[in-house]
Image 1 (cartoon, helix red, strand yellow):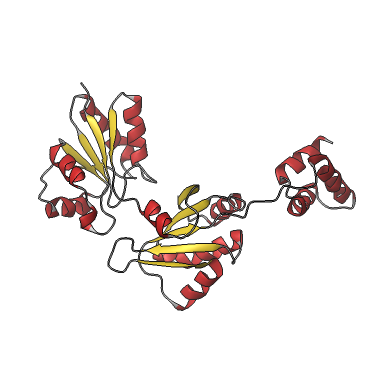
Image 2 (image 1 turned 90 degrees about the vertical axis):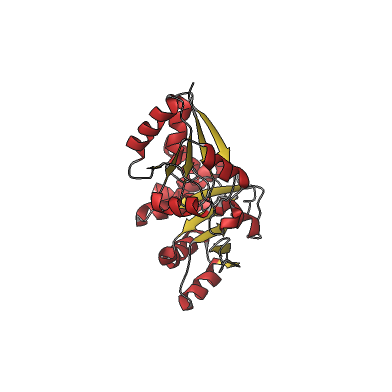
Length: 276
């Protein structure tokens, strides 16, 4: 009979947040798969837990995942932990979970800390619907395209960011969403210098122009205001696009301009105009 993979959430700063169930799980599994064995060893030593550790991280998850699966299939149990937070959330652990699911290995979640959810809860922004975006890519073009795709996102958005990239990211958020968009900057969650700054993106840029960002950040950004239903239907919109096209404007630019004035989809306008 196959063993069980346990996803054990670890503290994101305050060790007191580690649950008794999490400790019990680590004490009872056969081995622990860790993002960084050195970091996890400190946690285990703090709670007096002695278990074999194997490495499982972004750079070895393919080979390590197969090795862990092999051990699970012969009946061993494994706890997957990250340096901080919930495994498999914006983390290569998702690949191990999928591997287990495909091979009939039971996966159980031992709940605990998740920086994104904690930041959302204290942000003061709407929490009913949200989208987790994780870390933005360092590639400038991809970042801009990603943020542009979120321009009309009405759900609250959650991003992770490192301190040395924060200023650049705030500039990119302002370019995509405007400086008046509300944002909560939550840093050092659960740690000694935990702080939540609630302001506009423009105010955040001004503040961090004068102050050096410190600590790991979770950025919670308000969604776009719900667009009012356009009084112009698609047929009328296409007529406007074609009129602009006849005046010499490129079709793509015409579709974009009409979309901005009517609230109609730029892609729908462009496709319909092409058909005509």
